[in-house]
Length: 411
Image 1 (cartoon, rainbow, N blue to C red):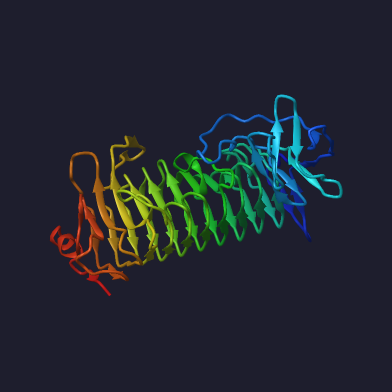
Image 2: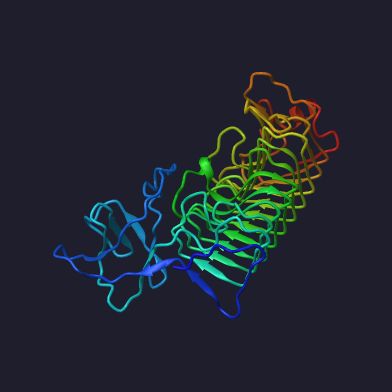
């Protein structure tokens, strides 16, 4: 139940196995219903959007038995092993099995490190089981501090986000996994995310289109995201959303995330280069959503030298999507002057597309181009509809739109 507000220039350096644990241990007694109960005052959260399959995503206190997370139930009736019920009105927790001889923990602390301090260093520490609200990090809280250096940390089983950092901050060599809403988030200028593993986040089931999954970068400038392994998140893998400028995504491996692999939304001038992006969005997909690499109403970007693999069951390749999204710090958000060059794109199944789509009614792809990309089709031929230029088309049709003059297809 530690909660730390660093001062400027503080360092927290773990030696050996150092764990900050945000839970408290509960004591149970038998109940006439045949269940076991413990008294526990709840911590309430604002109501953020939940997936339909996870109506209790805003119940931010998670329960663990011998370190294993239990699933929250909406009723104590028929409660099964591995599940628990929180009677918030009477401040009681119910289990179906006698917990005697087991350690039962309940998330009870909002976060481990928080506040506005500058130049904080955190290294070699495990941070787990904090009752963090959505959009708040167990490390970094509301992203208020600046120039934090977080290295070799493991951040796990926290209900909201794992790590949220402010301007000038660096996250390196860390393992951020099994957090309830989001793995990492960052805002401000000159941030760096290098050499981390970000995996299995959004276990609580927050609504993906709102904010959930591997990461979310908001209003950044000169952000570098490099050499990370981002996989198996319930949502996008790497996601920049809202007024990001001059982002570099380089040499990341992004695979098996539920939705997009790399998603750059209503922002400016991304360089997405030398990444391996595959098996993302492997669900039934409409339009050009759930692409391996997806630019949404973002301009002046270069997508080059990536290895992209579209799964057999759903998803898309490289997508430029233009919509009416408003105006940001450098003008109208629009998919203009974006270049997709020298990527290798493999379609494993009969579906999936790459190209440009627009629902503004203008049908204008200003300065956008696909060229020198190599396409591999594991099923079918160049006559299949694997491309989009305002509408679906085959390889010949795509080239007739002035695209892929130096491109190759299809082996």
